[in-house]
Image 1: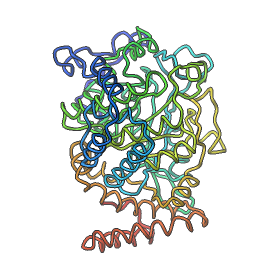
Image 2: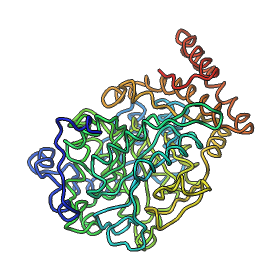
Image 3: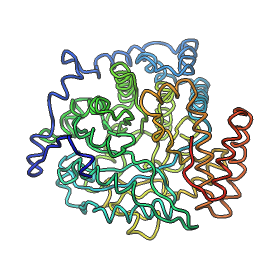
Image 4: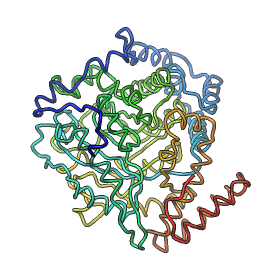
Length: 511
């Protein structure tokens, strides 16, 4: 751990109050807001929505916008606003078909699997909707030590078969950047046995944490952080200030909205954004997300690696998730996913176990690329609970709705003709940031995605699948392998050689 921090100065804080007062660095905000003007221009966003709402739906223009999406070009705010206003069922169906076609052209016929691993529920903030918030006496507080992290990895990698994590941290001085770095290194280093004796482990650790200074992000870069994920919650400033009290670190809107700018300056060029739908008007939030993506493209040439779609779910000690006037139904949620795929066509899109199985299955058919499964978001929930579906509300941030196991979800996707991927190759081959953005926009990354999906799926099936799941998945896997032979005939012999080596017991071969 110490080697990771050499020559990088990380600030220390005496206690939670010291952290709240001094953590934000104003100089690391101003540089990304030229002339003091924020890139989330609320008046402009509201103007785009108002203009679109007053204009009759022009089918020709909508199809022109869809054609632009197919070229993998980020839409302008007024173009996204036009899509938001579409109500004609036939045109909505055309939008969904286009969204799925774009997903397949960029990411191929696959869904990437991951699992959340909550490291701590200590927090200095008082967010009105969150079970982790400071002062919620119903929440049972703890942070994992490194032995406990290993216990969680033993279940996630050794019993379930996950290769990719999103590590989640509350904001607190005890779970500092040094702690985050140590947990990442522990997750990578702990190798365990699968039920059939193969050596398995975690190959990519993405992080969902509070916004950090540039110096801290450079430390995380040295220990191999994958995507750095920060959810904005709401882009509507007045709502943000109301539900994130003043005097808390999270109460600083500008610090949070510039989190990815600092990450990219620090060299962490895969970032993941998200809005907590249900806090404010979904149309405004969606449009603001597109504006955020466009600002990153303009300032750094790189947009978000992923966009997630959390929405309010019940949490301990608060009734806001059930009483908010901005809650959305499943049909609206699906529209948000479709329009985001069309507006930011290159990005990975994540729908988590917050959603019901029916909602997630619906979103698979309109453009998402990543899902979690066998998820437990209680602190130390994987190793403490005998059942993969057990939840304990007072040990977790919110309540999950999709309790399917990883194997159940894999089997369901196979029945739909979709291959499951555990690929982490891009991160380890340097296909991140601007490199992967170019590959995604030109369709090149999809070819690597298919190959590595096939190889990693073969691994999982051999190490973890039941005979019934194997029987469902083998035809899907064989079809994908045949497509590689047909589309990449010169490259296929090398792919097949890797595939055969995996069948003989080798692991972690990738392109």
